[in-house]
Structure formats: structure tokens, C-alpha cells
Length: 415
Image 1 (cartoon, helix red, strand yellow):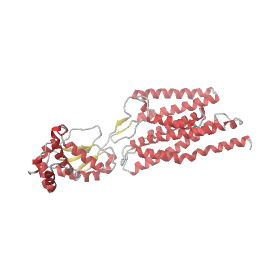
Image 2: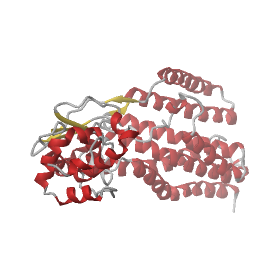
Image 3: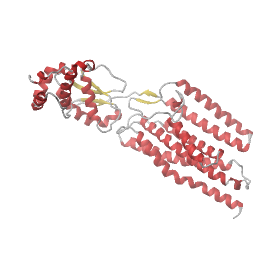
Image 4: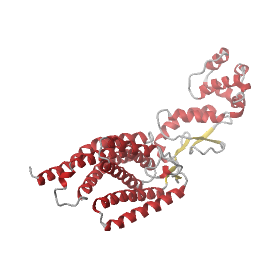
């Protein structure tokens, strides 16, 4: 075979990395699906899931790129026989590897978008977040390829994957977690990624990738005209790094929203991302509201609040703090309301340990749970035999003792 034929055959083999697209897409899809909040369709959380996929796809793409660079390095002597520029081969490699990575990323993005659209989604699509993730993934690919070119040894493939993986999960410093990919696992309702930060991360990734590629091409060709993209990329990195460093605050910001409510028989209001849970929440909380009616803890309205927002309970209003709709969320909401009825100071007093047991007996009834084992079996049997109406009447009379965990066995013998 002629030398030219060998070169053409090598170029034809460049498309082999496309066979890795399904495996890369599967890895990214699993990571993204795991990062999505169960039962919640929220666009900002979809962006966070894409970043989670990049933290897995990135090291895999870096390893693939390093392997391709290693393979091409072994055959590089044949390209020296042709009259083509020495930069053409690496540029073609990087282009094809970038297309492979982006194909896998777009498959993952399509899965996340379809999942979000199939549910009753909330928020607004963050196109800049999609772009930031894509540019970050390309940086991983470039790093892996250049590592394979610089150190053409088989361990470089594993090293490229390990180093890039470490960067995604462990950042040295207090602000570096804002660099792409950002260290955001889940984005719960009521908050969202700051758009300006996503734009800054996209520009940082663009500058970093441009600096690596331009610098490598300059080492191959020594052409002075590459100085302009080198300086531009370095300036872009410097400016965006200084801007990101100056942020020094959480990448999340509060998002304006309007409650989604269900009005009858109990008013339940939740964040729009969780509105699919309204029927089941109302069905679960209505019996609790009925049993507490006529007591100071009675309520007719339930409001969903952010995790860090604990307002003073209003008359007839209680608050729940759900972050997702994983199995059992209805019971968790019930438990939160029941716990809010109790006085934490008096119930935490060791002197009221006996009263806490009686309070647990009543709480089990309120929550439709199995009653706890009691040393006072007579009180437990008496309370268990009472009809529903009698229990409600008893709770109205003894609510103050229930709330303060000062119930006694004698309280269950008189109604």
C-alpha cells in the first residue's frame, strides 16, 4: 500500500469514536436522571441535571479523547510523509471528538427536556445553561486529547479521567465551585440558577478551550497569527475568572412564583412545580384537619414554603416544606404539621418523658399510624376503643396538655 493510501486509511478510521456515542449518552442519561428531583418538573433543576451529566460525561469524554490521541500519535509518522499542515490532523481529531461528545450530550438533554415537558413543568427553559454545559464538556474533551498528545502512554487515559473527575467533585477553595461545571446537585423549588452566572461560566469555558487549542496549534506551527486568539482567550479567562471570584455567593437566587392551589374541602397551596401532588396532599391532610378541628391547632389552609422559611403559624394556616415528590411525601407533610403542633421546649424536658409517651399515642391516631407500645396498657386500650367522635371531643378538652407533652394516664379515663 502506498504512503498516501495509508494516510487516507488512517483518516477514514477517525470516525471510529462515533461508536462510543451510545455508551456516553447512557452514562450521561443515568447521571442526569439520578439528579432530577423525583416527581418534580422544574426547568432550573433540569439544568442542574445536565451539569450532573457533564460531571460524568466529561471524564468519560476526556478518557476517550486521550485514547484517540494515543492511537493517532503511534501513527503520526505516516502523516509526516504528506504535505499537509501538522495542525490539520489534530484539528480534525478535536472536531470529531467534539462532535461525538456533543451528540451524547444532546441525547441526554433531549431526555431531560422530554421528561420535564411530560410533567406539568414550572419555571422557564435556561438555554444559556444548556450552552454552558456543552462548552464545559468540550473543555473536558480538549484536556483529554492534549494530555494524550503530551504523554502518549496508556496510563494517561486513566489519568485524564481521574483528574477531570476529581475536578468535578472536589474544588480547592471557597469560590472555585462556581467554575464550570458548578457544584450544584439539586435545585429545589423557590430557587433557580442565576442567569448571569451561567453566562459567565459559558464564557469561561469558551476562553479556556480556546486557550488550550490555540496554544497547542502554536506549538505545532509557530505561526504568529495565532497570537491574537491566544491573547483573546487569555483575556477572556482572566476577566471571567475575576468576575466569578467576585461573586462569592450562592449560585442560586429566589424565583418569583404564584401558588397553585386546590380549594375544597381543604385549601392546599404548593409551588407550581409540585402541583401534580395537590390531589394526594389534600386527600392525606383532610383527615388530620378534621381531627384537629375545634382545637387551637385546627387549620383550613396548607401552604408550601421554602426550606429556610419558617413563618409563625397563623390562625388556621399551617406550613409544609417539601423538596420533591419521592414516595411517602404525603405522610412527611402530615408528620411536619403534627410536629409543629407540639411545644419543642416543654416536650424536650426530661421531666415530661412520661407525657411524651402519651402524646405519641395521640399523634399515632392523628397520623393513622400504629400506636406505640405503652407501659400504661389501660390508657392505650381505652383510647383504642373510643369512637372517632369521642376521640375528637377528648382532644378538644386536652389539647393544651397534648401540645405541652404533659398528658397523664388519668386524662384517658375521663372525657
